[in-house]
Image (cartoon, rainbow, N blue to C red):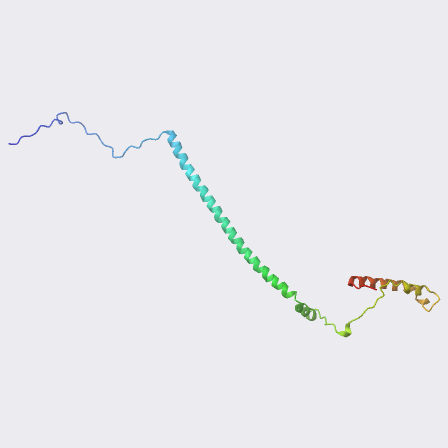
Length: 166
């Protein structure tokens, strides 16, 4: 014999099934929480922009440093080449070559030299001879100022050349 057990939980009226929402309900944030969350998002965005700005500034500075280094190397190379050019153009052989070919100068020989002897004592003894009107130089009285002027020119030239008179 089979005996069935009694069930006590089904004796009431059938209830309507409650619909179960499959989506969980979001908990609504209060206004203060929304403001704080929005501020944090904005602060994160601004921080990212600031980091990107500083990174770009570092890259720009690095590029400028690199380009200035390249320019400095080129200028140093130009300086070296210009110094070599100055040395080449300033050599005595080059100057002699340009003087003889382009300027048509000739090299001096022994016969081309002129020796100038000057009286560096002041020339006062000679001026007395010109003042003598009765002597044979009476017709040359007008040349006396010119001769004195020449001796002064010779003295000035001698002092420039560093010749000391005795």
